[in-house]
Amino acid sequence: MATIIPFIPSNFATPKIAVTLDGQPYQLVMTWNVSAQRYYVNVYAVDGTWVTTVPLFGSPVGEAINAISYDALRGVVTMTKSVPGLPRKPGQMVDYTLSNFQPGTYNGKQRCLTIDNSNFSFPSAADPGQVVVMGSVHRILNMVAGLFTTSTLCFRNGCFEVDP
Image 1 (tube, rainbow, N blue to C red):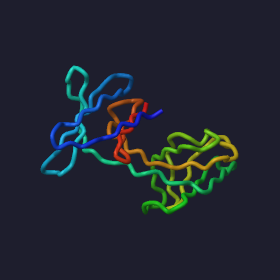
Image 2: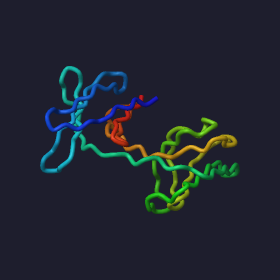
Image 3: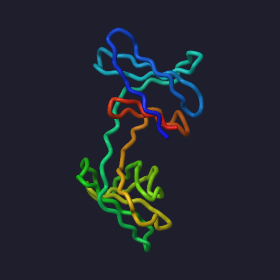
């Protein structure tokens, strides 16, 4: 379950947020870069040891799914977005996070094959089941990818999302 932390920029004090990444406490310190005209996220251990600095960039909002099909012969789930997304080349691989589907067998991270701007597919050895509630697809851009094994840190809708 993701922890949502609002980000409130300040002209007077450096914003700081305490987070837990991979089960350990860390502090995020947001600094303004005058040249780049943007915030940077600095990750520090509790003892003050610097871990990394990354630019603050936002993950796009989720997109609704309006159709799902399962091809048992190929073992592939194909999904169609309600509104065509960003132009992507057919055959491009994209990491998506599926959420709010029922049954929950659809939820989670998937490495997906782009078919066109509206359709994508991913492998599934077994039929995930009849969809009761359509969910949404998200592109989670993890700012600490490669540094932490189980935790993700993304920025979306003016908030930091830390999972788990």
